[in-house]
Amino acid sequence: MSVVAACVYGGGRRVREIDLTRPESLDMAPGEFAWIGLFEPTLDELHVLQHRFGLHPLAVEDAQSAHQMPKVDIYGDQLFVTARTAHLQDDKIGYGETDIFVGADHIITVRHGSARSHTELRAQLEAAPSHLKHGVDYVLHAVLDYIVDGYFPIVDAIEEEVLEMERSALDAFLSRAEIMRIFSLRRDLMRFGRILGPMEEVASRLEHHDMPCVDAEVRPYFRDVSDHVRRVASRADGLREVLSSVFEASSLLEQQRQGIITRRLAAWAAILAVPTAIAGIYGMNFDVMPELRWKFGYFLILGLIAAACLFLYTRFKRAGWL
Image 1 (cartoon, rainbow, N blue to C red):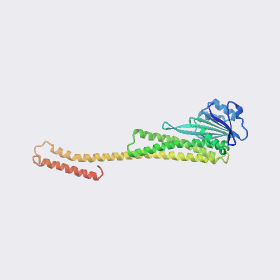
Image 2 (cartoon, helix red, strand yellow):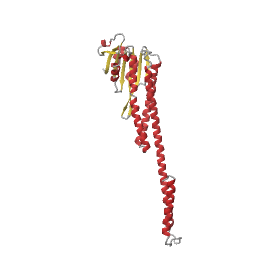
Image 3 (cartoon, rainbow, N blue to C red):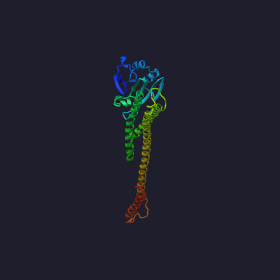
Image 4 (cartoon, rainbow, N blue to C red):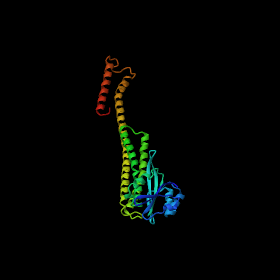
């Protein structure tokens, strides 16, 4: 069986390990609960737990399909919570799913597509018996909080990349690859936002509504999860706006640079038009033209060309075109 960890807890401390191949190891005294962590189990493996803990068939089916949006379902005196995990994979945001069965004497976590196990979380809770003794509802809060905390490194990494893009856009033209990356990040952040909204709703329902297996003194803890989700959502929205601003600023700067280049070309074209026009006039093949045989004509025309070009250069320089 794909069991990562399975233990019985009582009074905030680990009582014993569970061997799911031995049904008697699942017998628990009053006040004890089982915390079982599974990673991508088969349907047969889920049926074993379904039979032992009375899991609802629809919840088992959802946990097996692993294509659910974050939600909270109530089945009698049990809860079924679906949360979405997220991680960076090849410069893209990848997603997994964690399904949580919560009953009076058990909490079962089923992970799909997430390499971030709950081993570290379990160790932290076992080191804090005063929290773990609250029971399955506090473990549920801790698992959700652990999943949401995994969102922050994603927005931190994207934020650093976006800030680097912003600096680059102010210094030079964005390349085609950088523009494609901007649109790719915007799509990823939009998809991320579609996950964050339901995750916040899950935490809000657990905080504000009466739920089986969730005691009144534990419900305020879910406010912390909700606050974390809102912080991530706010930062994700901010990054999307910055990406839009980077693209717009880059387009404006590119238009400005093109305008400067166009003015410079126009100014040099106007300056070169003077000698071109004069040379064109005196290059005509007419027999009778003024000053053709004047010995100072050549020097006069060169001076006129130089004076006209210098005058135009000075005017364009003052106007900021050169």
